[in-house]
Length: 94
Image (cartoon, rainbow, N blue to C red; front, side, top):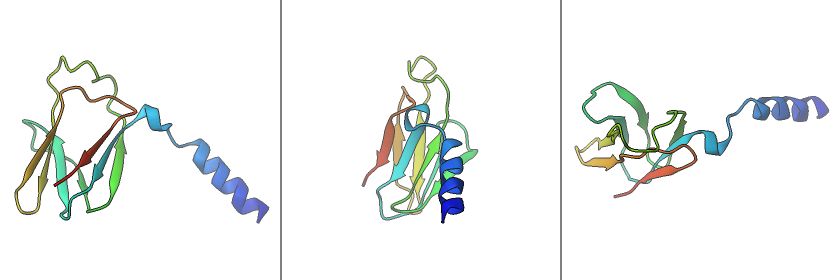
């Protein structure tokens, strides 16, 4: 039991803090694919009710015009940004 607790504590110590990452949560009923606007390279595919963290670095000022785009399986498009700040969340909602 003690070994399991020590293992969990060790693994949790390696996880970045919440405020060191930007979080995307898919609150829709469809899987979405997330990418940067103007870039077809997918950052993540997120199932309904799931989420994923990203460490995007300093993109909070919005000066770069950074915009995230999520496209659902049925083709519905959701956008977020500019101004993508670590410690914040984008909840994709229908």
